[in-house]
Image (cartoon, rainbow, N blue to C red; front, side, top):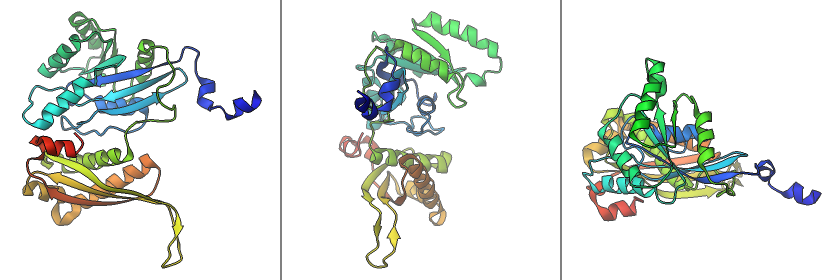
Length: 321
């Protein structure tokens, strides 16, 4: 028995008898802080963020485990009305399809803004029989803190929410309470994933998202929304002795990536004056990758024009949408 206990995973020894596990979809209109919320709940940056709406394009799974529960968060693209291109339609489908087979939904709204796309999202949720928790994000921005109570009452009258939790994802306010609420609504079950795992997404995917975020943040309003990133090569090289110089070389991962835009003018924006923007993007992306992957990264970037990719079904499929 002592030998079995020694080799047993430590996490299992700490698990509560009524351990809970399940899938939690994070939904809402674009730019209400869904990705920021997931990142701060995890204590780890997985989903990219920026001030531009519709930054998240794919469903991204983040895994939060403690001794009481395992919540598998599904960060979704924002549900929006204007499906002007094929990519918008696919993003909406990705968001809605995330509601299939989840145990709980976090419906995220802005503390002081209620828009048509919020109503659209609520309408989609009303067509299901899912348990829905309303998360009022950016509550710290309310000038009158007392106004949150009437706000909660208003939301409670509009829909039968299982719980309503005001938070500030960016400032980590009331997230402990939100975790307690999440755990209370998950079924008693064994962990779905290894309790040390934080995502089911590949390093290649995370690398492409990090690069895309750095472009959007670096270029600000100049950045073309019509860009995507494709990882062309992802090669791990173990520590070894250089056969030419005889010097030891540390383990390193070599990543080659292509940034696709739709027009030549957009290419110039991404590259920047004398290549300074793309150089800075590479440096910032490499730094984040080394922190996330915990290894040395050598990153090479190219920028190419692929006209009409965001409205081309075949192109979208080949690029992973």
